[in-house]
Length: 515
Image (cartoon, rainbow, N blue to C red; front, side, top):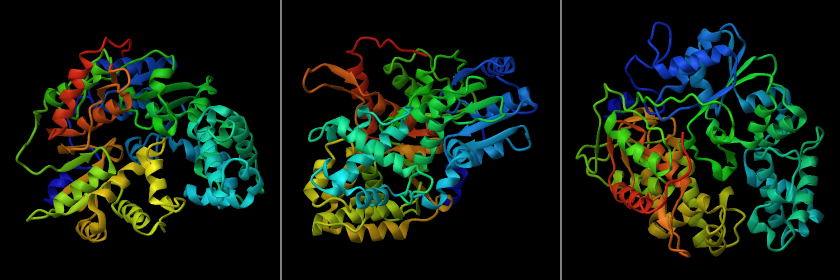
């Protein structure tokens, strides 16, 4: 079965019809030809691209059409950059970089010895250095450091040039005025970006310093910006300042997953002509129909079209083992792992992104509940289990909530269960069954995808008003989830959540939105 999982090419691309996979000698669709023609004109525009519509392949065709024009492909992350370098291989006029890599070349190298990916370590350094400043923000220095760092993080994700009261997390404004917190955070941030400072910084810190200093996009005449729906405000500010360059924004507004991190949906906010890609090559008409249910509920006027040569099916239960299971949360993923290892013929499990850190966090939360303290960095600042539970009710609830659920559900059996999951895990490429959260599976695909049972309806009745309302972030998550399958989409209990959402949505007036 490991071979079957490999053929599904999790994280890669399966074989698709040649049409639409733009390149030398391949016939382009009418939509792709329109995009290539607009690119030749030198004008800036955006490409709203539904799931599986071959956006990177289209950009390859654009690159060929505008050669030898110096072109920069800005990738959303390192994995995307790695894949894009393969796709653009041999095209010497195209440079492929992540935005952070570009910022590092110009500014970030100054901070190279101080880079710290762990937020808790930065918070601890701030607490040690700014005791006086922080004592005015919270009852403890550690608490003040968390408030200041939370403000700094929100600022670094924004397009602003300095820290303002609006960057203070709302929950932190109860005890101290937002202006006071913003002023303290501004002083701390200025100290962090001093070239001779020894304070640790994150990758977002040097990126922000690059943006504020006036980012230089060099001699590139054309810029491809992929995954534009999840751009940070800082990244958009960089691109907005580059009006002398041709800018081609590519993405799917309905695949925005990181608004909770301050992402700005450029596919909706940028006022440029739109040239859509609606023909999917990943799946056929059956899966496209489910995706269109969600798109229509969100007010989208365009539809994603299934590939004519794809013979796909959508079922509640298939009776066959899936190649991948996609969960909404880490708690749902953990449940699926336990269900899998409990079978008589347990499959080899591959967890996208790796299982080890997930298991460490589960055990760290378990330790906090049973001892009152945790050695895991993510939970180290919590003084009690009750404090962690209270935190899940606020803005960080999505981060910590799943671990509270897991600890409550499995109790004292957790250490033994984590050990069993660890033993069953192998590299994703060798797995019989791949498990992932939606966020980790974005950009990936598999032949037979089953959805886990932890999705909730994206349309619901407001508890106070009783009126139906739509959670667009949740709808986006579910659109991404249903569009990962190539041949079989197994809904499981998600079918009930989808029906409930659509029935609720039918009672709402039409949304003034569209493609």
